[in-house]
Amino acid sequence: MSGPVHMSGIAELVEQRSIVVCCGSGGVGKTTISAAFALEGARRGRRACVVTIDPARRLADALGLSDLTNSAKRIDGPWAGELWALMLDSKGTFDDLVRRYAPSPEQAEGILANRIYRNLSGALSGTQEYMAMEKLYELAHDGGFDLIVVDTPPTRNALDFLDAPRRLTRFLGHRLFRMLLMPTRAYLRALSVATQALLRTLSNVAGTEIVQDAVAFFQAFDGMEEGFRVRADHMRDLLARPTTAFVLVTSPRSDTVEEAGWFADRLKESKLAVEALVVNRVHPAFPTTGPFPPVPVGSALAALVDNLHSYQSVNAREESAYAELVAQVAPSPVARVPLLDIDVHDIDGLALIADHVFDSEGGPARGSRLA
Ligand SMILES: Nc1ncnc2c1ncn2[C@@H]1O[C@H](COP(=O)(O)OP(=O)(O)O)[C@@H](O)[C@H]1O
Ligand SMILES: [Mg+2]
Image (cartoon, rainbow, N blue to C red):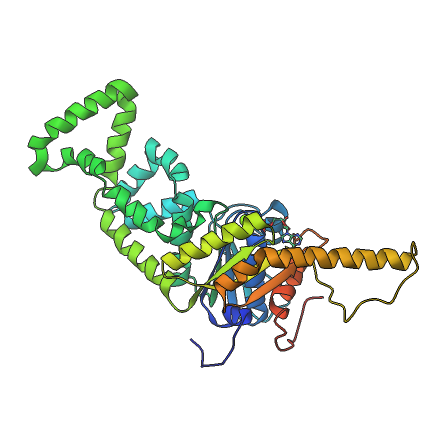
């Protein structure tokens, strides 16, 4: 960590933290905000990387993520630091993990070629959440980045990544799993009669090939549990570090606000705090200093004043929709990002979003900006 520069607010997160995890329900602009955070880190001189989950097509293109590579790519631009981006490939990450932990290259190839594995690794519930954690862990260790911003999957289960590593180890330690491993263990040969009977029954129902595949699958994982378990503990530590921050993203709509409150509660249960709230797509307040003098009815000016008043009442309604959430995460800072009249699909759009997030606190003026 750098010296004890005193900073508060959202800017502190991109200037001084190592990991920022953006959570919130799908569709609120989580991917956009994550990318804007990484861009802001790069503008402030850091080597920043955003790990995206499901970028909209055009944003992915702008970030050079047209195809899944599972490794970070650098985006050139007029910032002092570096901006990198990676699109999570759950399947590829799982494959890498198998290669790393298999006791031999042959065992790794056996798993990767297994039909059950090939279907399961893409579909296993919690895989995406787990793999997001796995990738984060890998990047935090060997990526050489100052700042990693993580976008989380767009589901209510997104926070499953908090205990996803543990769930995977639980799965590997499952009784059925143990039982299927038994035939390989000499000292349990005698007991395997029951297992054989079970397998025969399963074979009758599901077909011999499938069962053979399943047995091969579980046998292939034999001996890899310990590696997974140790890694799961490290991941948990990584999330709990003071250099990791959770940012909650919401829109001002009451349904997403409610969901955001639920996310904040779940983090709290895991002894993790929301360190900033970003309310995206708000209608601006356009504050006025006092009531307008009377304007001629039906004039163009009257139409503008009407328009202003309706903006102000929409803004007031929105503010009250998320007032409770602001109180729930207090004293963490809150940034409001207006609903822009452009679709945010390139670096300029992200820069505009970042300006709103990081300037809304009235922080010190900064140097070089994008046009
Ligand atoms: N403040 C904003 N103003 C206008 N459009 C926005 C804003 N924030 C996000 N968008 C757009 O909304 C869409 C969804 O955003 P995205 O970040 O992919 O949401 P999520 O990741 O939460 O599903 C994208 O097309 C994005 O460009
Ligand atoms: Mg998204």
